[in-house]
Amino acid sequence: MIKVALRVYGRVQGVGFRWGTQRVAHEIGGLTGRVWNNDDGSVGIHVQGKDAMAIKQFISEIKRGPMPMAIVEQVDIAVGTFPDYKRFTAEQG
Image (cartoon, rainbow, N blue to C red):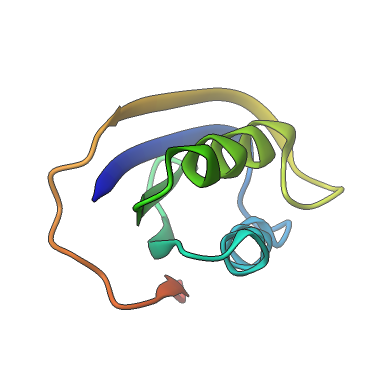
């Protein structure tokens, strides 16, 4: 299982970014994880899957911004050390 943790900076809150991220994960398929807002205005993402190409495609879509109003300025990427997820969810808040 490939696990990646992302932190996305820019205009990524209040523009549907979390819901767009969830949509991208579902469209690509085979990915699970979660997306949430951080107090500093960034968005956190945990994504996991067995297909490296699917993970790469997901990251590319996130860098582009999954919603038209989003402006992604920076994406920090790290190896994920989180527990397994059963589905991909966008957390409220």
